[in-house]
Image (cartoon, rainbow, N blue to C red; front, side, top):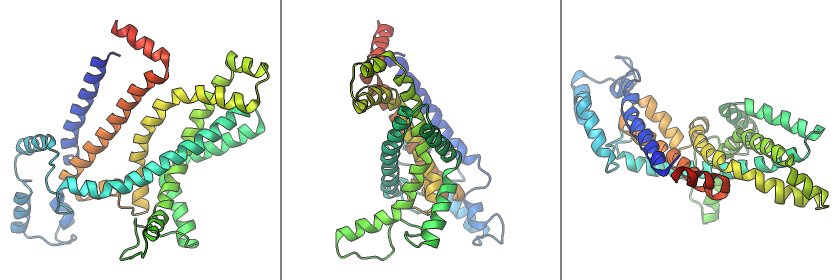
Length: 331
C-alpha cells in the first residue's frame, strides 16, 4: 500500500471513530440525571424537576443533538471536551491525572510479558518436538484460556486477602507520608505489583505462542540446518540465527498487542480499584459521563492508531523484502 493510500486509510478510520465516539455513549440506556437519581425517587439522591432542568441546562444536555455534536467537533480541534460530570473538572485534566498510573502498569507488563514470553517461546521451539515443548505448550494453552479478570481475582484473594502480602486496592497508601522517596517508590510498587502480574500472565501465552510458532518455522529453514552442520555451537545457532530471524515478523504484532493490553487494563484496574484510565472509563460508562467518555475513547483510539502507524513505519526498515515491495508499488 502506498503512503498516500495508507494516510487516507488512517484518516478514514479516525473520522469514523470520531463520529462513533459522539453517538455511542448516547445509545446507552439512561443518562447522567437518571444515574444520579437511580431512575426514580428511590435512587441514589433525590432531585426535584427544577434541579434536573438546572443540571441539564448547566451541562448543555437539553440542547439539540446537532448543537451538542457541533460543540463536540469544535472541541476536538483544541482538545477541549468540556467538564466531566463526575469530577467537575476539565476532561483533559482528569485524563492527565490518571494516565501515568495506567502507563506504569501497562508499560511494565508489556516489558515483562515480552521478555518472559519470547524467551520461553524460543526455548520451547528449540526443544520441539519433545516432551518439554509439549508440557510448556499445554501450560500456556491453559493460561490463554483464563480471562484476565479471573487471574486478578485469584491473585487478589490469594496474595492480598489470605497472605496479606500486597494491598487490596489503590495506587498509594492513603495519607501515607514516607520519610524518604524510596519509601514512596516501594509503596507504589507494592500497589502496582498485582495489576502488573495479572496483565503479564494474561498476555504471556500470546507472546509465547507467537515466538514458538515463528521460531519453529525459522528453525526448519535450510540456512539454520547449514549453520548447525558447520559445527557452530548450539547456543550461537539459537540466538544468532533462529532468535534474530524469528523476532523480525513479530515486531508489528507485538506493537499492535500493546494497544490490546491498554484495553485489557479496564478489567484489571476495575478488579484492583487501580486509579488508571481503565477504572476511569468504567466509572464514566456507569455515570453516563459523556464528555469524559469522548476524551477517553478518542485518546485510546489515537494511541492504537499511533501504534499501528509505528508498526507500519518500522517493519519495512527491518525486513528488506517489504521495503523492496513498497518501492515497486510506488514505481
